[in-house]
Length: 511
RNA sequence: CGGGGCGUAGCUCAGCUUGGUAGAGCGUCUGGUUUGGGACCAGAAGGUCGCACGUUCAAAUCGUGUCGCCCCGACCA
Image (cartoon, rainbow, N blue to C red; front, top):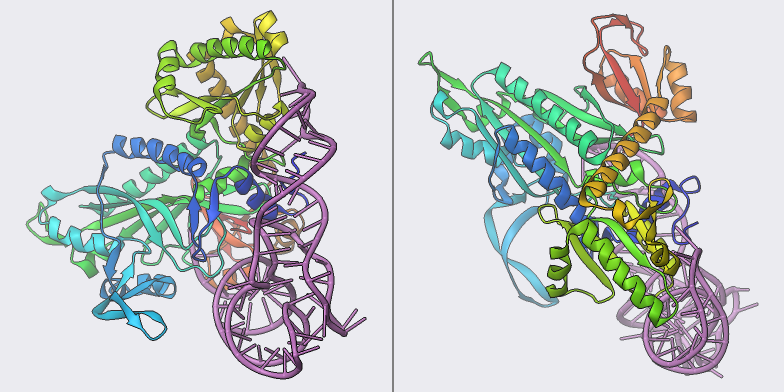
């Protein structure tokens, strides 16, 4: 039992914070609502970036960078957009500081205030209008990795912070069909990524009008169910129609010699994904990282008493490292500056994933907890008894499964295969949880009972309606997470109004 | 931004009612014995009690103000 982590059943919110603290993923910043993403946490973000970026390239997108500051007037152009974001924008009004009576005071008032981007549809729309002249300029397929700021009043590390990191893709197309296809294509990219890379089973769906992105024609999202039975939106993809093209004048001369407004999309995923990883996979002992996103794949814990034993264990550990990372890496690591106590060896130069040998002057038990809490998928114990037998004890973080292996069993392929197995086990476990906590409701009372007593997703017939959704949210704190796609054209009675409807939705309490 | 709570050592908190030398546990550092799942002994360092003003011979303690944080609501990737 970890003594620095509150068990989930006692206080889930505190458990979440304890896991982050114990794994050193993030820290509070001096500015309320902002966080410092520490190296352990940032490495997970880099892994997410690496794999998503590859998927974006494979679907034809390129990266660029647009500015942090946006003229205030830009935001105001699209009515719904300004309505959605005006309440949470940081506004830059001055360009300097000067000494006043009580210290520094702002000076150099700006003619037009600038806002710190809460999202970049407006400034990108403005630029696109200058870049697009003809149908030959389309499609325009650009992504950017950046930070955004939404002045949140209640914040939680990774899940909701004032500043967060994300990527936002922005595309412009010749036809509505093409833009719609792009929107759904990127939704698929996110869903595949979540499952294949992060072991997060997700449900794809469409947002109701009440929940959609301000300014979008249609919003889609992937939704995941956390261990406490609450849903978390993990990524979104928006079909913006011609809404932004019209207000930013993104128009082109079509094949028919007529001028038309472009059809645009936008789609994004943020550091919130790290929160999803934590809440989906981790346990009362701390963080459990999905192997492909883990910066450290295995931690080797040497066990010894005498100096002679230490030497023998050290020699054997070198052989283990060489078997997993290659003999060249052993030499390369010796040239790198690093802590003497924790030595890292890259097993993959591209992903910078590594294994470590923990030579710190601490007891083996301490080291076990240390790496366990950080979510490292494998721990390898090497003691005098192992050295004598030419073996080691390999422990899986996920389920504490233990096996004794010989040196000859290890290889880079073995490690890759092991990671694949762990990933598959994590995905299966998470999917089982999601399935077991997705229930059908035939009546409003039944849904109310399920959501207040058990949580999870509730699948039901529902005719989307703002007033009804507001009432439901008020009464049982649940919202429509998404309208299910791929539903056969059946009709059923709306759980709220009783009217026949063709839409089935997922309800849940959400983060 | 409304309702409630809290600011004392790196962390968790006691002390405040009834004003009088600044406390505990954990952590940190040093030395020793230890080391196959969170060791033990000995010693040490560490705080203008959130900040300001006031009452008083005397304020962590009482009063006023102010700033910050946490929880609950409204708003949200």
